[in-house]
Length: 365
Ligand code: NAD
Ligand code: TYD
Image 1 (cartoon, rainbow, N blue to C red):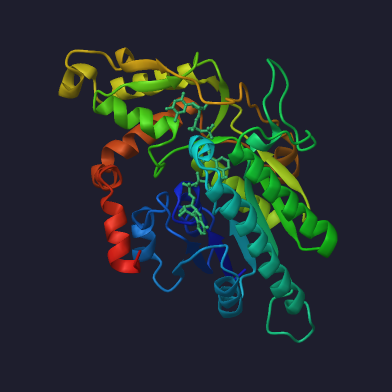
Image 2 (cartoon, helix red, strand yellow; image 1 turned 120 degrees about the vertical axis):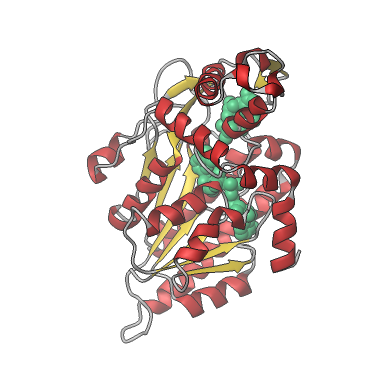
């Protein structure tokens, strides 16, 4: 494989994926990163990649809904694979403003599929300069399956039952991706993954929000009774799973990816407090004014339509591709806390919005 087109590569998982592919993934080719740089896109996430892989890494600022731009990118770079991460990704934002979710997650995925199909069909012509093998990998979420009761896990065969505007838009995009395989034969794969955590996570999501609030002595908001269950996966493990699927997964297949790590939200927040206590003991943190980290836990109004429990059965990817999570939650959380402590510049730029100013100076609005 010579060129991979990554969409949404300036976001949390996409940037970790690009780093993984060039590093542990052992990829020798080129990555083209197409990202609109919404509030969630941060080129500082890739500053080391730009320096280290000059000539093999190209950034294109743009929208996956833009057919003309997409056509130009496929013509120019002739990717052998697409790793599609670009999305509006935050459930709470989807509750307050679903429009962007429908546009990017549904219409954007459609535009990308349609462009990829044209490119792939033309590239199958004999003697064409285009590659004949092609892979479209769609990164999706376990939230498309809905909410579980006390027992059971999501399998690839679990019927879809999305319940937030975010999960409904992701479910819709999954259906489109599958339809392009069944109807046109486009070689697609889909991964449905559980909650990720790790470096470069934007601090609107639970784990980074709690870490950064705790360090500043601010409240740690826990929605409702805090007994909702999520299955947590360290982001690098997710990236490894996606790379395995792109390289070895069977076209037309869906693979569930999970961390074997079901946790109640309140226990995640308490785990963050313990990890912080080890890294920066509360008695040395002036922002806490003599409190413990756990004293900051504050129960707040529940999220509308809050799904109760997610859990993933990842036996298919384990059996077929030999993938399983390598990082345990306590170790992953410690690494994550250490990363936020070691990168105060990144944290400051995200919290003050300075990362946006840098982008508009270099790439326009
Ligand atoms: P993120 O919000 O951190 O990043 C999304 C990226 O997409 C940003 O860089 C943003 O600028 C870009 N983007 C948004 N709209 C765009 C558009 N119209 N055109 C081009 N780029 C656009 O999200 P994330 O957490 O890294 O999630 C990446 C993917 O993984 C998403 O598809 C998400 O649904 C899926 N996923 C996330 C999780 C999780 O726990 N975060 C779990 C399972 C699946
Ligand atoms: P989040 O990180 O937003 O991811 P997702 O909604 O995709 O699962 O939320 C993870 C869980 O934590 C979810 O059950 C909602 C809950 N939560 C809180 O309790 N407090 C918070 O401040 C946030 C952001 C989330």
